[in-house]
Length: 447
Image (cartoon, rainbow, N blue to C red; front, side, top):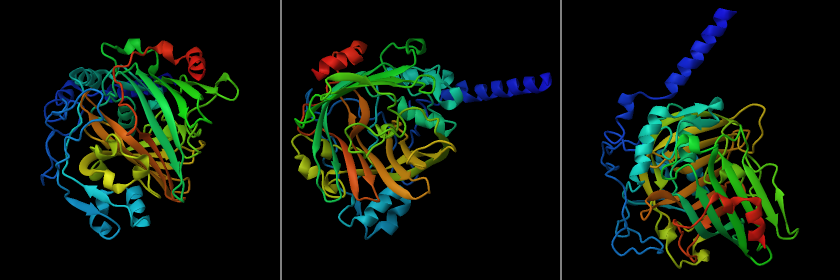
């Protein structure tokens, strides 16, 4: 018996040792690999160029507070993918995107030259190098220790490490913004919901160390400001790092009740408030929260057509009616490029509930941003597609989505979030602190 226990302990220790990479592998970061773990070189055919640092400084003409001018506005269209020529390109597409094209002859992909624009501050690259040697999964993969600020696993060994890279990627220090969201019904009708949002990131802050985190990733708050009949409702979230150890804390101010209530659960398959029942809590930011309800598998890396450098849909002054078309977003405002992505598949574990029995994620090698997700129900049928349309916020610098969509491929409707064309640009220097994300602060917001 004693010998069996000793063997189990040795096996556990060996697994922990394998969870970290050795110094020779970490030394590749910034050499043949990018500082965040992507392949620095382009592909053999030249259709994907080498990464040369990304877009780390604003282009000429940019002024703080502007909706980011498109640095690639002069790029020429390479080709268009639609329902007529789909067979020629289907191997480069997520299954959900292929299905969206098949179902909607009015939808198409405008494919442009690949621009590897993702960039982050040097301190994030330095922290990623530290994390590569020190970060490890804990709690059965439901938490991370030994990491701070940078990507925790730039050379991922499994699907859980890859999805944590997305969850913990750099998104700035703090953001204050106003955006709109809409649930677009099958008949094309929708109502805009305008939200004022604040996020204070603890994990990615300058100078933060692993021991400073206290199991906290970030703080998030929003207030509904339009339409008038919903204005005043508000939500605050304190996001934990290991949500199995301590579930995220969330409070909601209901305008009708004039009181703050603690939400017992805002995770997993709980429906997001104010989304018309079209999005689960863990679909915010393409995926968030504890990974414990799924079995994760890293399927490798593929070259695929992905939404990227979506500056056209981000520009100031575009009427939202020009973006939100029936069945899908206006394809003339979207940009797709050929990029290498990590493919991660998540299968719902036995004994757990969720409307998505399987999800297939496509993660950008240069930023760890999830770019697309195929959504399957518990019987294995494809039912949805998520897309994140990112840009390089070169004034930070940071790479992230400007528009996110969730398509219901069965019902012919979709949800769009991040519409900011007629709002002030994001403030990445907002004066925020954790004190702004408490139930007491939420009560003040509601009033």
